[in-house]
Image (cartoon, rainbow, N blue to C red; front, side):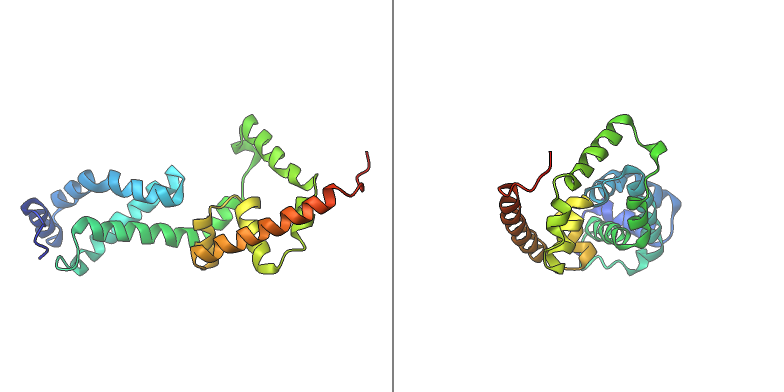
Length: 191
């Protein structure tokens, strides 16, 4: 057993392994906020994060016998389960569909204004400039700038290292800047 593991955690663990309801209630009370915080850092949506938290506790309940107190603390093990559940959700097609499907009824006026302003990139030709990028760079730019993912999320979706995402986006932005500057100084706009 890990030498820093306290007596209270050991008692809780014994109760969990015996499938004691009081132990699971205590576990949820003591750790749910911390695990929800971990999940929210990845998911960014409170409703989906709460669903993942519930799934995490179900997994903890069903896999508690696999926990090895000699390898890690209980919280570390649970945090890893929560993180993995969150990353699995991001990879799932359900998440992709939910992020792409937005009904007009769910949007406030300010959301609609922001979304309309985001579409104005087409008015200045950014999408057209992006079409000439190499496919790998275009894939990253599409996720980061047109779909609004973070670099970390894009790395997960594309199953690439974060450094690769950063270098591709940097190269693409340099290329786009050069193309944009070339087009801006050519008088080809009609007023």
